[in-house]
Image (cartoon, one colour):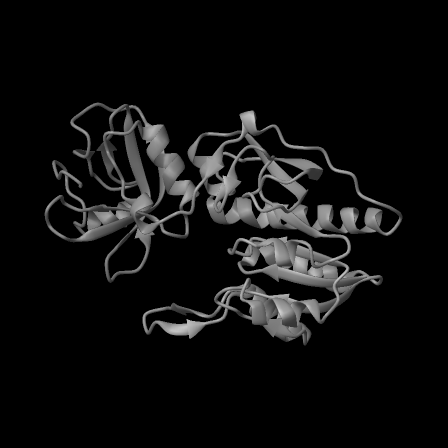
Amino acid sequence: MNVIFMGSPECACPSLEALEGLPFVHLAAVVTQPDRPAGRGLKPTPCPVRQRAEHLGRPVFTPPNVNDPAIVAQLASLRPDVIVVAAFGQMLKRAILEMASHGCINVHASLLPKYRGAAPAQWAIVHGERVTGVTLMRLNERMDAGDILLQREVPIAEEDTGESLLARLGVVGAELLMEGLEAMRHGPLVGRPQDDREATYAPRITKADGAIVWSMPAEAIVRRVRAFYPWPGCWCEAPRGSGRILRVLKARAEPGYGYPGIVLAADGDPGPLVAAGEGAVRILEGQPAGRRAMTGGDLVRGRFVRPGDCLG
């Protein structure tokens, strides 16, 4: 089975490695996003899938637009039997969708039709879901709307972050991919249509999504801290108007009452308690701008957060 793989982030690497390990699969090429600036020096850095593919010695394409006719022609020359997509980051047009004899299949980190879009795991945490999962689906020209081939549920733990949940979903996605490709060896893999009436959406996350709105309920703020770790992270000004940014890395909801954003208590461990729209948020770990990450207690002892401060 001749396969082209398309993916970019760390959570797609288990699917890439699964393809490499299947004896009946020939991995003809890997397609990833172009290198992006990263780190303090903003040096162009390859995505995790590109790094892994090069380690495996596979041909790698990094087109800014995979639907460019020249790229489409190069991929078609590889004569793929199936194209596998996992968190690639670009929409595919008909020329690619119809290129492979077995079509394009996608490993998507939700139980479709819920959470169609770019960041399903993170938004599932934000919305307080207890269960999510992985869907193996056929791609069409609509976003995450193709027929469902296989699905598997995955529980969301109380302490899950976006990072930890995506890591688990990546492993489950690789298992579903292997199961699906094995089935395709013996005949057509028949899917079932999605019910668009049940669809929900998980849009791409931006840096602005990490801004803490203290008028939200404490539970909602804490879920966002978990969901947006490590990127874009949740942050606020400490104190409001100072221009000094504090990243909140870990927090929990506790009882408390006060004007949203007011530091109700800051007397050492386990960290400052900040009033929210409903309840209060205990900051257990944080990182002031230009400093290392530290415990909530160290934030207090270093006077980065003081009683009575209003955080913005």
